[in-house]
Image 1 (cartoon, rainbow, N blue to C red):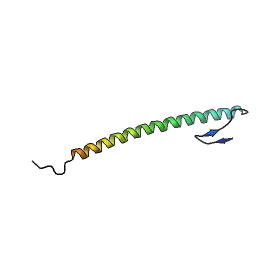
Image 2 (tube, one colour):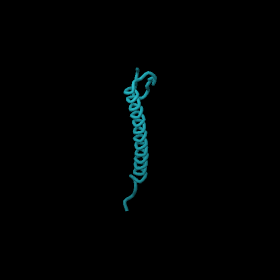
Image 3 (cartoon, rainbow, N blue to C red):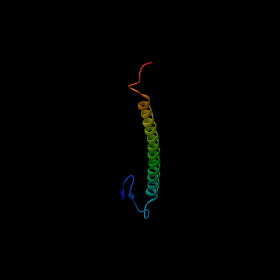
Image 4 (cartoon, helix red, strand yellow):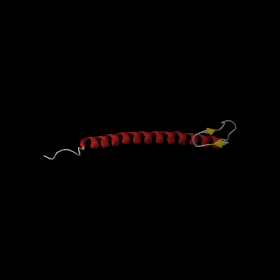
Length: 69
């Protein structure tokens, strides 16, 4: 029985009840891990977008050759 955390090849036939329970728990864990990674990716993308916008505004507002009044 070969199992990788994200890509797994297991046949559900001829397994004991404990093995089926463990397989179900692993599938739930994989599903929740994927959800968590997607959520973190979304947060990081929003943060990058905000920080890029702030840095662009800072450079746009900064006028190095502006005459002092």
